[in-house]
Structure formats: structure tokens, C-alpha cells
Length: 196
Image (cartoon, rainbow, N blue to C red; front, side, top):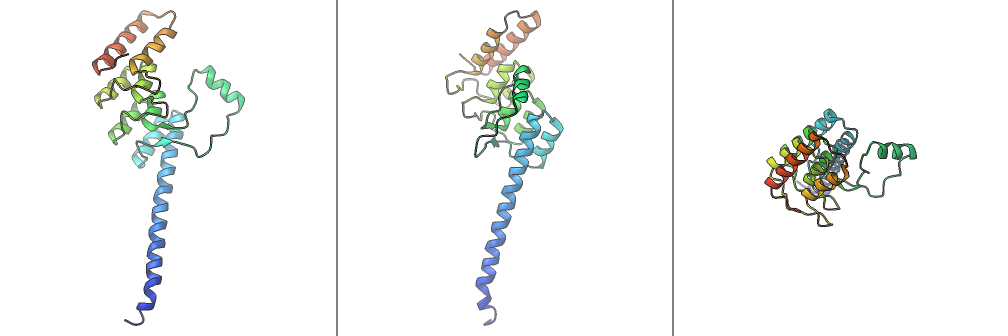
């Protein structure tokens, strides 16, 4: 007993170090999985995003930077604008990014893993608002199935129905198909309680 007693502080120190190392490893692994999820979504690589989700990426992860990301090369920024893609948001939640990019399968996997369907970004924009902006009926139906709140407003006071109307105003010469789609989106949004 006398031989073990002097070694007790050493054992306690080793235990604390081991627990600290395990905690840091788990956090580092979680960060890598979350980054893999966002990288795959930005590249619109659905299989890679689904792989990150099944590997344990946080379904409510926020893509944040400690410092602002470096600006992209000019040609990449021009190409993004020409393709009508939104600028990257530094604090976009995973479900919101999936909705913004129209990744219904990824959004479904995130919601099945417990993602908050009403989780807003820094501007208050929810996944439902992002889906309404793109008139994505499949994604809107999925979000409605997971009880998305249609009355939720962003920081400027706009609802999902207002986001849908913004895109409607930009459509100068709508085809019959687009008019029918717009009506279906508006009807679905009104069913889940969206008002202007």
C-alpha cells in the first residue's frame, strides 16, 4: 500500500490527460465530419454528403469561420454569379444549406437524424424560406412533413410566402408550367400556415 500511495497523483494525472485527449479527439473528429458535410453540399455531391451524415456529422451544424474566408478568385466569383448561385453564407446551418442548394435527399437525411427543421441562419432565414425561394415542391413537402413553421419570419419580417413572391416578381414572362408550379407552392405554404 505504501508503494502505491506515492504513485496515485501520477495515475490521476494520466487519467485526466487521457480524458482530455479523448475529448479533443472527439471534437476534432466531429469538426472534420461537419466540414466534410458542408464541402460535399457546396460541391452538390449527394453521396459524399450522405456519407458524412451517416458517419456522424451533426445535423444541426453551423458553418462558421473564426475569420472571414479568403475571397475567391475573380473568375470563380463571376462564374458563381453567372450561374445564379447565392453567395456563401458564413453561418448557414446544414438544413438551410441543403434547402438553399436544392439537395432534397441530403435534407431528408439531416431531418431523419434529428435536424431542427426551423433552424434559422444569422439573417433569420429558415430552410422553408430557402425552399420557397426556389419553388422546390419536393423539398417544401418534406419540410412540411417535419412540421416546418410557415409563420416564422426572418430578421426583415419576411415569411416563406414572401420569399416565394419575391421570385414570382422576378419572373417577367411565366410559362403555364411555372404558373401552375407557383400556385402549387403558394397552396402548400398556405396549408402550413405561411402568411405575408
